[in-house]
Amino acid sequence: MSLAAILLGIINIAIVVAILLLVGAIILWFCNWFDLAVPANVQKGYLAVVALIGLYMLVALLLGIPTIRIIHGSFDGNDNRQVRAEGNSAAA
Image 1 (tube, rainbow, N blue to C red):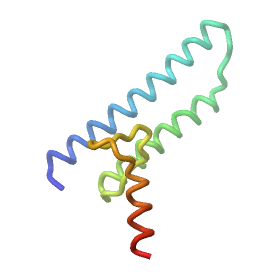
Image 2 (cartoon, rainbow, N blue to C red):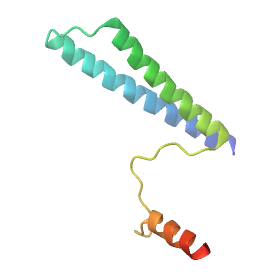
Image 3 (cartoon, one colour):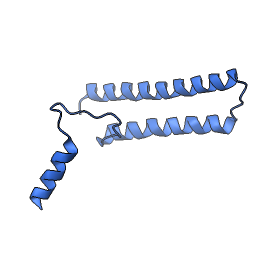
């Protein structure tokens, strides 16, 4: 893996963590706006989850394992799961 790919991956991880922290800050802002108190342990728990997501993404980047894909599209429009299933049944 090239240095540019690692740098791009680290920037991607920073963007994901920043977005998650921004979402948490907006939720906290709305809760304060509606006079709902969010306990400190819930806030710390959210930060711990965000940190674990960032750590998982960093380890996945360094080890070359795939991260979870929420949105997945293929270039040719075919369903890749169907192609893999047909390929596995043909080999068996």
